[in-house]
Length: 324
Image (cartoon, rainbow, N blue to C red; front, side, top):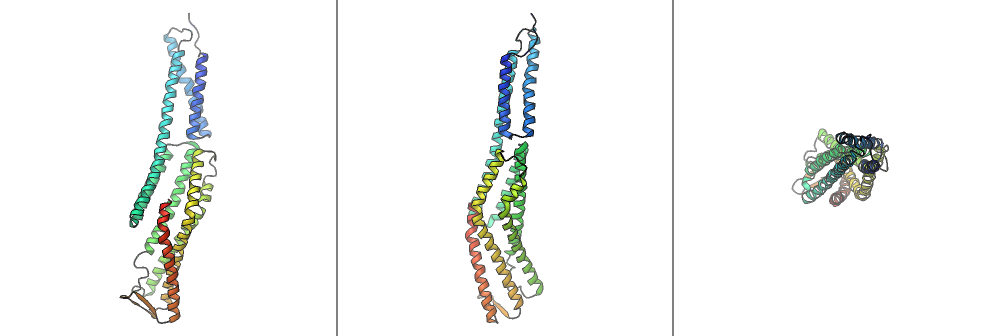
């Protein structure tokens, strides 16, 4: 006897359970937003449609018997569920690997920089490239609100990276042997060049300081349209806020010392320019002597302050690397 095709009660109950599991995993992986809602609806339609079509096929093959295709429906549904679980597991695994890669890159940078401080720039370039690649991969593997988080992170890192690069560029120019080479300071052009170089170092240090002071507020502004309940967002903000609270107490005196050091060196160059023709430098004893005793005292006071700031920079630089 032929019977009309219809899913059994067990099919309907099982499909409801599978649909709930799929929706749960979607929200767990991607967060809850319009994209996830749409994707979940699509998944539910797939859960209903594909097993139903295959069950319908077997119902025909079995001669339209009552409950024909019921088992097929459940088997196909089970295979779809197992496939989805495997896919979700792989997504979670891939993302965790990317996050682990980020942490590994930072650890390697710290170890290399502490072991060889002279390679800081090259180490940072490697770190920067690794971080960029990891963030790009996270963006590719994410959707919805989570993707917005990684896009915001990429924007934040680009700003942080460019700030650091510009500061390093200014610092390296300032650290060139030419700066405060007393044998070179004998013409207007050289004085102007050195003053501009030192001022750029001061300016970039001020810019770096302002960025670190305001980076949490900047990030919150960039992510104001992101769902604050999203796990990726909460983890990101929590991690950065915690890191900021540890780094800032060391970074601020560190960068202030850079600024003070630069200002001191600039004052010395300006003093030399104002007293041009009234000072001499002994290369053998490495002694700078002013004919004017007042200028000599001023120079020594400025130099002592600059040396104090330099000592602070040296003391805190390793600590900054350690707390990255």
